[in-house]
Amino acid sequence: MPKISERGLNMPESPIRKLVPFAEKAKNKGVEVIHLNIGQPDIETPKVALDAVKNITMEVYEYSHSAGNESYRIGLAKYYDKISPGITHENVMVTTGGSEALAFAFTACLNLGDEVIIPEPFYANYNGFAEATGVTVVPISSSIESGFALPNIEEFEKNITSKTKAILICNPGNPTGYLYSKEELNKLRDIVKKHDLYLFADEVYREFCYDGKEHHSLLNLEGIEDNVVVVDSVSKRYSMCGVRIGAMISRNNAVMTTALKLAQARLSPPLLGQIAGEAALQTPNSYFEKVSKEYVERRDILVDGLNSIEGVFCPKPGGAFYAVAQLPVSDSDKFCQWMLEEFEFEGETVMMAPASGFYSTPGKGKNEVRLAYVLEKDKLRKAVRCLAEGLKAYPNK
Image (cartoon, rainbow, N blue to C red; front, side, top):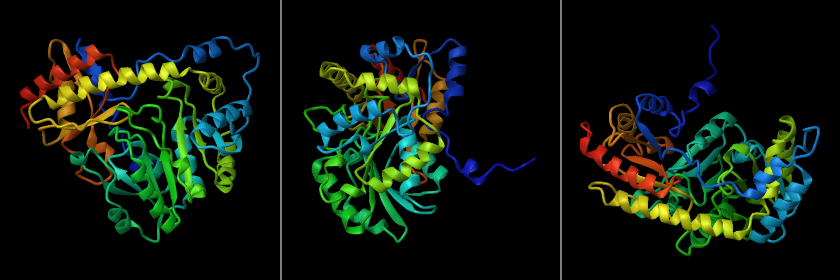
């Protein structure tokens, strides 16, 4: 039998999805599973986007430009110009989700074996993208005690070698919900400028910032305009994860020209998704105000509820819709599986994502879980009660 490739074997499992078989078995037994493991919002997709797809009159679903429909890119450029004046449609490429945007960025900017520094915990699929593109992840750990603030710049300096070519951050963060301050971003700018590195930013949760805090885009960092590549997506902003539309944004013409060759190789991004994405640009601000208010209420229910459980600690996120909680267990992978296989409370159980999968450093996050507060408030209250009872009953602490 032919052998599987090393890259395939080394590809990590998703901590978000790997427990799905256990959840399915629980459902088959009649247990209701409250899904806090995945960032699939129950918020309605904007009507303007739904109507655009429903009312399509074209008779041929043809290829678009490899960089995306020009009208959509022009619309996106107007959106980004409000964030960072001067962005044009030539600085924007439409991609098949934010995932493809980051894979394009890695491939266009980094050689095989090059290193990218990422503060951990980070979105688990970054490990997968790095493995698939031949890039080496160098993690720098942030701490739950600080709410996952940016690690000291000295830690970055210690880890920069001749192979270091980039730094990647997610702002606001998945899985932590941490929102970087302008001061923290300026520190990153200085080290990027000093070592002439690329600075990749995953900004897909830009619209979700709470408690009066402001999002600062890397597109506005002065002096490193050609070093910055931003990854974006419509998935969470407009609650339409299934359309698989993202974007890559950079003022570096060489990067965009190189990425276009990669885009041509996959022909074009999804046509129907682009139609929905372009229409979604007309979503009124009132939509985001309503959604943000809802997420703040959900966050407070979940985080305050978690912190009321003996032995649990969860810092309050400043953005996105995720939180990482420290539990009084030694192995959250085993605990999360046990919750699905062997526990129920009033006919329900909770599905969580073990946080170890969001770290690259072996052994990190073993007593942490990531939770997504994307469900209605009553569900979150039930989830907190169920988790509290589960921790009381768990025999293998």
